[in-house]
Amino acid sequence: MKTRPEERDRGSVMPMTAVLITFLMVGAWALVSASQQWAVRRDAQGVAAAAARAGAQGDPTALRRGGVIDTTAATVRAEAILDIAGYSGVVAIDGDTVSVTVAASIDYAFPSPGFPGGVSATAAAAAVRGVTGGEGG
Image (cartoon, rainbow, N blue to C red; front, top):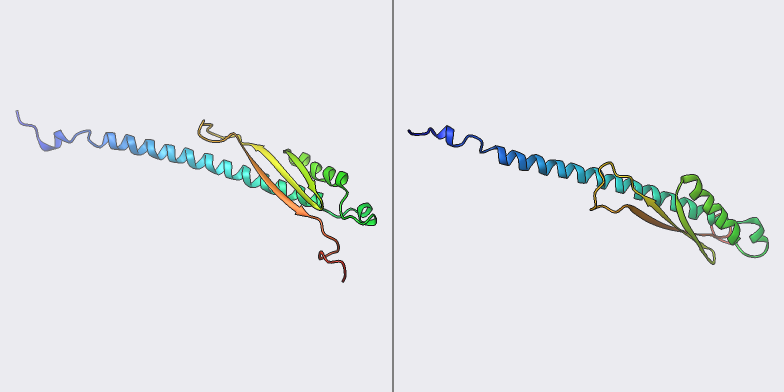
């Protein structure tokens, strides 16, 4: 009994379709997870920058004493921004520069051991005298 050419090819597309669908599903999963990670990193960077700017605001009491910022008040302002945003972080003051490091956890829609559980972002702002940073007008 001879087989027709059409019968020998029956089912030959099925393995290729299965591989293609699997590849597309893994690609979609990776894209969704990567975009979630990117969004959390962007948000953490924004919060770190806002907290650093808040901490680096000139303090009237410190300006009267010849300084630009009061370290205690700067730390309180920066930590208040972190608390309001719901993040934890570390505030460091070195001279007139306020540095803030924020740690954020990522809640993935499709968790996987291949992606990190959290990200961190760091921002710094320097306190300057005057409206434009110069002493005079």
